[in-house]
Length: 304
Image (cartoon, rainbow, N blue to C red; front, side, top):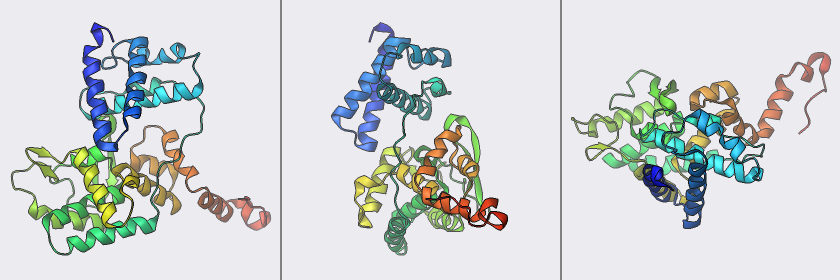
C-alpha cells in the first residue's frame, strides 16, 4: 500500500487480529484476506473512506477475473466493511455496491434441534446451582438461540434491554437500523435470574471490566458450552446459533419475510439461503397448502 493507505493497513491488521481470535482463522486464510483487501485498496484507494461510487468501480476493475475470485474478494470486503461498522469506524456500509457474481452460496453451518437441546440441558444444569456465571451463560444462550441476535448486538445490550413482562426488545443493530426482536418467556426468565448478579453501576446487561463482554469472550464461552454438551467446539459459534434460530424457525413454517425482519437482513437474498437448508420442509408446505394440492387439483403436488 502507498502512503495514503497507512490508516487502512492498521485497520486491516486489526481486522485480521479479530478473525484470528474469534473464528480461529488460519495463517493462510488471514493472508488471503489481506491480499484481497490490499487489492481492493490498489483499485479504489482508502477502504475506510470509500463510498458506494468508489466501491461500485470494483466491478469494472475485476471484470477479467474469474467469478469465484470476484466472489471471494467481495466476501472479504463485505466482512471488512461489517467490521468497520461494528467497531464504529464507519457509520455506513457500502457493501451493496460490491459486484455479485452468480455463484451457488455455501450453506451455513447448522446445529440440529437435538444438539441445541443438549446445550441447553448442560448449561441449564449448571445454572440450577445458582452459580452467577452459569446464570449469565444461560441468559446468553437463550438470547442467542431464542432471539437470533448477532454477537455484537448481544454483548452490547443495555442493562434494562429485556424488561419483565415485555415479550420483545427494540434493538439498534447493523447499519444503525432499529428492529423488533422477540424475547421468549424462557429467555426473559433467564435474564431476570441473572440481573441480580449484574453490578449496580453497570450500564450493560453482560458487563466485563469497565465495558461489556467482548465478542471474542462470547465466542469462547459458546464453544465452552458446546464442549460441555459433548458437541465438537469447532462446530459452534454465536453465528452458528443465530443460523440455528433461523433454520429451525423456517422449518416450523415461518414466513421468509418475517424471518428477514427478525434477523435484520437488509436484503431478502441474504435470508433466502435458509430455503436451501430445509428444502424438504418447503416442499411439504407447498403440497399441503397450495390450491392445486387439494380440491379440484387433488393429486397435483410438488415432487421432492
